[in-house]
Image (cartoon, rainbow, N blue to C red; front, side, top):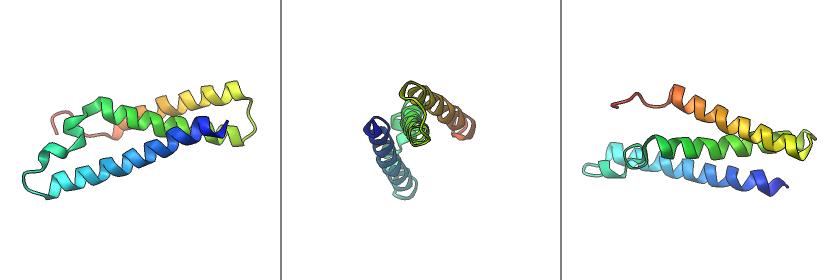
Length: 96
């Protein structure tokens, strides 16, 4: 059952590293503004990334806490929603 939460967590972290690298390249290399993930994928991309990481982190934490499987899935969903909310709160301002 660990794979149910571990795989989204791993994929989310890998995509997060790629997101950070693409943002850095877009900000520092002239003519590469098109690779900015916020421009290319927008809010939907940021929310998807946050949901993957939030689901994986909350789900795997509750799984190792000994919670029943159904409750771990609910906790994973709560973690996904929570991290998406944080990404809305701390994300870039509209028009940035």
